[in-house]
Length: 153
Image (cartoon, rainbow, N blue to C red; front, side, top):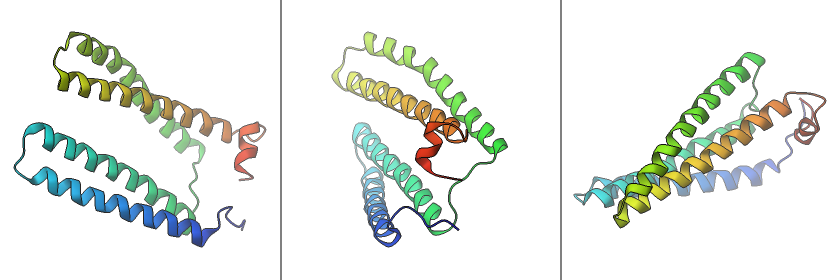
């Protein structure tokens, strides 16, 4: 069995500490959202909590891939994951023009800001998912330069 590239103890300590911070932020945001507040405060608190939850999920996957079993995909799983990513990317590409049109029609500060936030989030997420899908495909081709970066399977 190949030894992990990370200094495992130090790496896991950092990941667990970071995850604990995100967990605290989730709890704080949930508490703030539960208070009797106006819709904007409640929504922002919920979004902050969801973002922290998203990071916790990814962090947990990273920790488990070091502690238990390295993340892997067989060809069928890769196809399924690519299908999921492609569906989301296609959906986001349909949503983006709608969001941009809504931004053009909006005149109020808060809706304009929130629409700008959503548009930036759509663009960022779309780019990251496309990059992930491309890197996954390249990493599964044993002769590709990218797969050599990730090491032998």
